[in-house]
Image 1 (cartoon, one colour):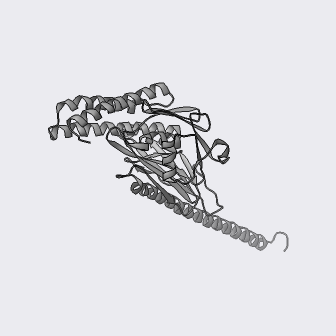
Image 2 (cartoon, one colour):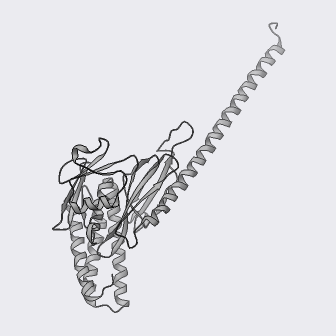
Image 3 (cartoon, one colour):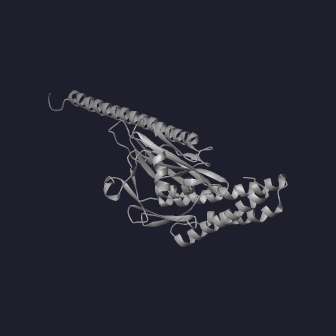
Length: 338
């Protein structure tokens, strides 16, 4: 090619331009394919989060004291538990949010910040767990009713196949229940025999999670992550009394606080229903004061229960339990509405 040949320069530019256009086309093709895969991934995650929420419904108890179940997932999954307290966004009951992230087939990675599916929202579920859970094949659910004194809700305690809990030194009435339920990844063992990867749950002694039970006063505490989570017993028979204890064991403290507030708000609404029902069935006026006192106690707890104020939080729950006890006595004597 001679210097100054215009054809030579035109030919070279054409090739450069073609290569540039080809690179742009390839880039756009890869980008569009990646976006399509990402959209499909988001769709799968959103559907899975909704399905898990729906699957939790038949796990909830009816007449049973408690129920254990397994949720199978076809792919490695991160599950996210979110909770909005009562009155947030004008919702008197608060909200339960469930979302998932599925490990991508491209590179086998996930980004838990950017690849969560759309949140599925429920107003009648109370899921107690860590805020994020990593399951390879399964998630486990323990469902127990919570009565105060009437049934408020079924509480769902959730943990993945990648977490183990080792219960140490518990009284026989709790140990026997755990043995009867035969739950996956729940181990009953002396401290020295707990698997090293398991979270130790110790009765009356310090370890990963410490549990104290005041059976005389129907209350107790669960200490974890440097925080104290007070609980009260359920108005149920047998081991089912310790529903909130299990909820505190399996929950992040923040999730526990939010869900307890939601339970108290739900109890307040149920108290209103029973106040109207009392009128409709001609029930004795004597039941009105216990119901109003109960309603005031649960309303105060719903507004003020905070785990970073353990003494005050304990007092709120103790007051709720006392008013619930008075309501149960009045109901049994006067009306038998529940």
